[in-house]
Length: 358
Picture 1 (tube, rainbow, N blue to C red):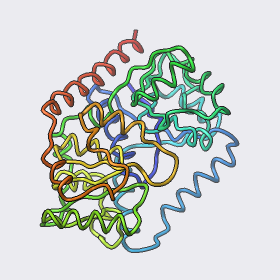
Picture 2 (cartoon, helix red, strand yellow; picture 1 turned 180 degrees about the vertical axis):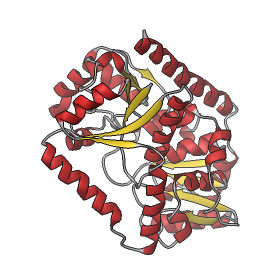
Picture 3 (cartoon, rainbow, N blue to C red; picture 1 turned 90 degrees about the vertical axis):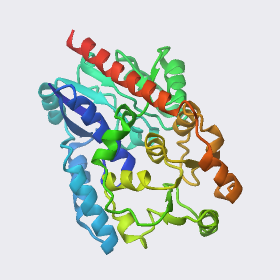
């Protein structure tokens, strides 16, 4: 069987690449080859201009560290086949070429993604052969101007799943349908497998606090986190600091390795939190400073794994004593919950394949 995966695509975001790899791996375990489909609706000429502009951007190297990072991401992404679906002809060919379409995971149903790419509900494909695998809205409420289009897109899908409770509520209120809340696909794969594919080539030879903030940090907050880390004998390592050339250039497998070898993780990132949990690393979760809030999925994740007390509104709320407490705080059910979630998403995939093949 051949599957097309509709998800976000880009050579810059660790979580996006790792969840894409996870979906591909979960399908491959069932004998299904997969290709990531980069679907964009609208004028095909405009779409092709957009496509080649993105390709050109990938070739522009601004700094050495930036160039090395882009090269490492590109090499990683090339291990995951992808195809552009930009015109009506492309959509017709895809409907003939693939046996099923998988929507997800990541924030494929975020309203900003909708406005940029057009609907991401696989309307070009027979609905019976569409599987929703942990897609995320990334918000707790949809803007009024997209409600009717989302309702149409969601109602045509035979079975729905989402990655957060807020998304399930959106679907219920919009369509009356129940959507199964699943974990992120990365959690459908056990930690041993992730450690097997991870790389230590960016890991320093000292104990460190790993920092990864997609919303950015101001100088005061970063100084505060560094002081808290150093008070416990840890060096502070921000993977997005271009001054840390080796870490900034890390590909997604090296990103997993950096988390695995850390003493504690500071983050506002969903997937950095996921891998902290999977790899048994203490994590402190912060609300994102900038941009549209996508915190609903992190709240669902934290509650599920007993990490609600690990969420802080700001780095200034952390102190050495609290950090030491959080590093020593472990839920006795973590391994059990990881296993339950992995079992749930794998059962969902098998059930959906039975439905599609019936």
